[in-house]
Amino acid sequence: MNAVRFGCYLAGGVPDGGTRLYPGCRDPRQPVDSCGCELPGGIYFATMSSVWGGGRAFYDPGLPGAAFARAYLITLEQFADVVAQEMYREPGDDLDLASVLADGVAALGPGRYETLLRVGSLDGYPVLTFTAPWAADEVAPVAPSAAYLRMLATGLCDAHGWTLARSVEYLTALSGAHGTWTPQALLAAVGQHDTPATTLPN
Image 1: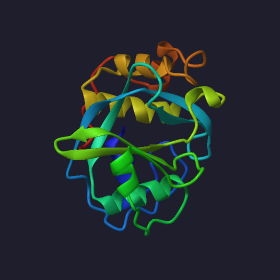
Image 2: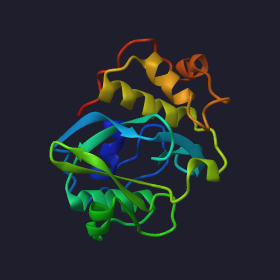
Image 3: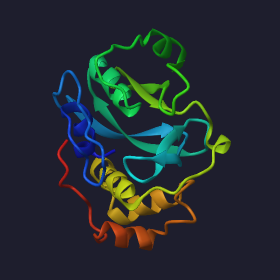
Image 4: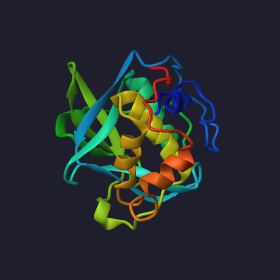
């Protein structure tokens, strides 16, 4: 969601609040474009992230409702390198995307972010993402950290033009965050007020 955090996948670096140095892509250029979008399904938090110290966000297209996301227009090579970095691998190998483009889903392996999905099209380009091979109800929810939620909240504000209050209401209602985080607690943790966050570069 957060453009600055996504930039660490592309050009390398440590995201604010994170603990991992990302090597970056073979092609470190910024996305040609980006925009907020909605995907059918939902987001939930599960498994423990060593980078953020809490639950990770996963996309489940089988959940009811809509998942609010951000689309980045990048190259196929960059997409392959982002996938590799999410699985703690060194970037450098291309992906054969024929299966996911044709069938809408392809499994690279059993890992937490090795299931590729085609979730639609946008301006003539296929919208691709990656998630876990399991469904939301097949794994125990894990509460995300304040730093991780801060990154997601500011990204939602920037991509969708939301207020911070709307972003934290959305995030704290998701499985894993719900019951641990309240909107008021997350607003306090983020340390900002109910104003649009518009300072992140695209």
